[in-house]
Length: 333
Ligand code: UDP
Image 1 (cartoon, rainbow, N blue to C red):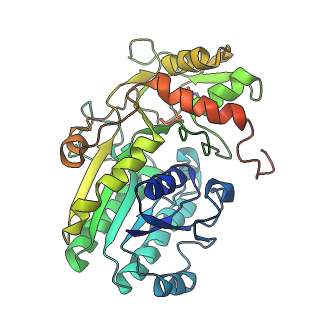
Image 2 (image 1 turned 45 degrees about the horizontal axis):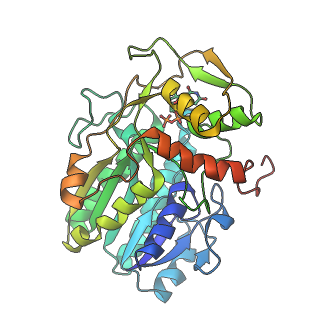
């Protein structure tokens, strides 16, 4: 398949690009490099530094290629910022994909794979989270993702668009060969912050709350390897052959892991102590989020290769040790 990967220089998108190549597909990457890294995409892959909301720039790209499918990873994903600057989030996460979808449909491309999130569920009414639980996001970030899910449903009916929306749980880890990994600026995610603190490159890790109704008082999350996420995106191709297919999958390992367990895993893998301070709960953090991925397992034959936190952290650590300042292409690197 010839696949346009929007956001292909970002964390999950760049891993998916490599998995596409490994599976014999032909990715073309589009990324405005606001958060993406040029070095995360191999030089032999066709790359366009354009914004997915830039219709005049998209036109020649779609005219020059016959894409079979578009994957969309290019979203802003800082929950706190989405609360303080919702316009930025609606512009980038809703208006820009609208332009991308409009352009692709105009050019007869009718298959779409969308990065959604477990944040579309808000505070879960039941655990583990199955696909058809009520979706009630508690922040603009989750709402923008849900808005796009709803737009896709409408386009499936109006234009025969076939789509898959994957609700990721906590994407983690790095490529097994250590070639690419996680580099956010600013970094807000638990695993890279814990590794940076262990190495003394970052301040002590602040644990956001130890008074949750969980076994050790810290939040439970479902950490899923970024390459496992990527493989699901490719496993769904066959099902997208049906015009108007509307597919939703929760992607997680189903294993709840606490913040303290993540810290222990980082200490075990690195052989270093993670300095911690106990802080307040972070606003908007539900006590527990973990997936029931039975649907992906049954329909896509998706079985995560990385089933627990230790091996996931091992891959993250390999990348982090070799690249303590990420790709080194940002002023704060
Ligand atoms: N967390 C923490 N300290 C940090 C960053 C995160 O205690 O500096 C906790 C956070 O409260 C959550 C878990 O780690 O329970 C995972 O947070 P992350 O930001 O990595 O992902 P999220 O679950 O927000 O998508």
